[in-house]
Amino acid sequence: MPTAAVIGSQWGDEGKGKIIDYLATRADMVVRSQGGNNAGHTVVADGKKHALHLIPSGVLNPAADNIVGNGVVLDPEGFFDELDSLSSQGIDTSRVYVSDRAHIVFDYHKEIDRLSELKKGAAGIGTTLKGIGPCYADKTARVGIRTCDMLKPASFREKLAARIDDANGLIVKIYGGEPMDKAQMIEKYAAYAERLAPYIRDTGVLVYEAIRAGKKVLFEGAQGSLLDLDHGTYPYVTSSHPVSGGFTIGSGIGGASIGEVVGISKAYTTRVGAGPFVTELTGDMGDLIRERGHEYGTTTGRPRRCGWFDGVVVRYSARINGTTGTALMLLDVLDAFEELYICEAYEYGGKRIEHFPADLEMLDACKPVYRAIGGWMQDITSCRTYGELPEAARAYVAAVEEATGVPVKIVSVGPGREQTIVRSGIL
Ligand code: GDP
Ligand code: IMO
Ligand code: MG
Image (cartoon, rainbow, N blue to C red; front, side, top):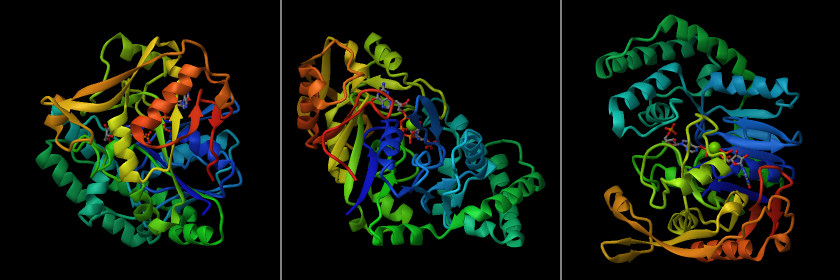
């Protein structure tokens, strides 16, 4: 089956955008199924850097349809800012379609996100403040507003007015904030509704028909498995399902419709925002990874926390996603280290732990059990075949395979499309 799903195996920012863009040169359709513009996917094509948030990373391939599926939460302001920016660079955005079932992120969701983080203080999640959690909360509480609602102007205004009243109640009474201007917000989103209408489709049908016609369909994950609402480090997670199961619900297809599941992993580990991180490096080593990998958030600009490769995390991720192959990213960032470490297991209370624990207190007390591997201490950014990589780099890749139980099918040695070593074809 010529379909593949790309998921993040760690805490997001693994390089999904680069691999989607690479695979999209062969794809007929790229589908986003969860998250919203909390995602920041960087694509470097022809030396030019593009940061994508809501628009699928296949948009640089003019031959592909780009689907924003029903499981995505769509901020119209973010959507059009991004679309306009791409269009102004001469990129064809005429094949972007938005599901009629996607929920809308409104200004009050962003305000509640901000106030909720403020109230939590030091115990905050460190969200992207894009209103993602509050929007999914409304969806789950069955009071959300969907894109199909936007197609009926009069009832859309009524629904939105009622929601603004409820949101203002929460903002004022629970968070002690200022009420938001109802009339202004209604006018703002009524204008967006009009502009969004031509993009709205029953995208489930488009995806289904593409799969039935044997077209190459690529499912683009956002965030990472350890940020999954069920499987991640709860409550330090996002409010959607970045695991491969999220594609079936978030784009309306059967589970058997996904051929290959590619787990995108950094050759080390990063995370933005709060929450447990067993292999985190807080000293010079962490700083060196951050500087070499330019580890600053694509969406928020925050410095990312950095650490060694955590095999327990990626093994866990392989299990819950059914990963069939790994794309090992940013291997070049490790060029400058004499000694490298891969975490094979955790130690907790004198016992060896092989499986990622649910309990955060236990995770905080877990110590990494490392395997040391010699570095290669040379620039690998111009290697184009697996054989050209230094022996020590190949030994590192083999150690990753051993720790995770998944074959490494792609090795990435730089942000550019051409800096991609494919060991085994996907799609
Ligand atoms: P995503 O959210 O998973 O799409 O990842 P981000 O775009 O947020 O972060 C990955 C960063 O790493 C981006 O700046 C990419 O351009 C960059 N990148 C991707 N692959 C490589 C690589 O192999 N080497 C280097 N040095 N940078 C890479
Ligand atoms: P991409 O797709 C990394 C993190 C936030 C925070 C938590 C909850 O670029 O990999 P949210 O705003 O979603 O409610 O924040 O999730 N987070 C990400 N971290 N990459 C992302 O996306 C992320 N999207 C959300 O930092 O810890
Ligand atoms: Mg990112």
